[in-house]
Image 1 (cartoon, rainbow, N blue to C red):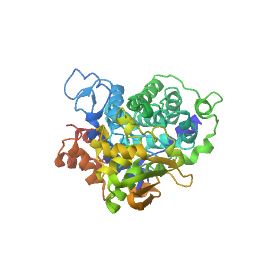
Image 2: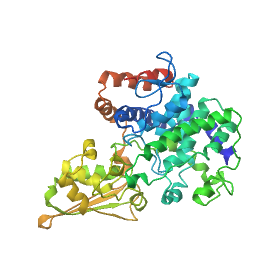
Image 3: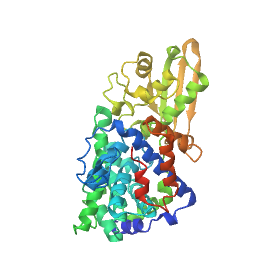
Image 4: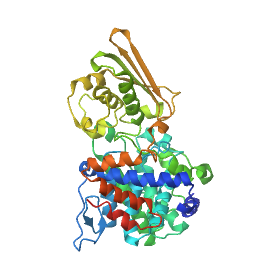
Length: 443
């Protein structure tokens, strides 16, 4: 499997991508960089030591400073990009790939002074690796408490960094093999309200780069590190697959097109809950004090993801709030719309009353990114609304990407002119340079 995956990822390229996937990949660049700009105040991990030489020494940090270590830059930038959990996610692989592979690719591109098209090739290889190695197995590993982002995204980081390092198919495969031994992350943080969720992406970004550095130094990974009897998949999922079983998941177009750009800074699972709650609030205008029964019906797998059923009453931090379907719904119904600041506000009685009464349960017939909200009102009135296949309604596309992304820049105190300069660099990235793009991200 290692050799076949390496060959598949070595063949991935921007030039071969379909036109819709090219447009979506650029949207992902805009979205994830913009989310990082807005996420800077919410990072929980300490900033690495700054480079000692001149202003252009070392590797770019979203703070505007630089650090001497490429892996340190990837580590910290990944945490910042993920700090609002608004970085894009893959609903089938159930993971965040961009927040891991983008920072690794950024640091690796600086080390190689990579042109823009090569950077795009690397991003695409990273998305393909993360999706290809997770889609078939996340339903088996997630119920064990293993977070797919920490488990599978290091392969995306390794693939991206390997492409920028100029490794051939065998080298890319070796980096994947080494990554299998440094992939980890647990979902208990979503229940405990703790900070490991930022550590997961940070270490995944840095560890993928480490696997590439070790490969270049001649360290050999196992040829059956993934599919051996004592390999990655048997250890984590209890299966020993062949590459033929997952070859269809190594589709670069699908890896990008299936990725969801998050409209809201809450869990991917709660995106449809927030969207449908906004519709209920706008169309029906229910008075919070008149709601007697609140039911939230979800896809069975998503409802059982750790943290989705969080109800407090004493939420500890952003990390247990952002996962809570009850909190997300109640916040919108009492505010009339989604407000990011409400995720940090404690003890708001109208919202907390609805959280306490919320009945969150599953319907095995609902597909992913789907939900229903049912309200019983004083006087016997009932409100029921559904959102089926919410990925389509939640999508950020060419008609909405600029307004949405500009809002993030302005929330971070940046100007429209700064955003436009960044946007222009993305538009010509395949003909330009990665350096020019990163320069537009400076505060």
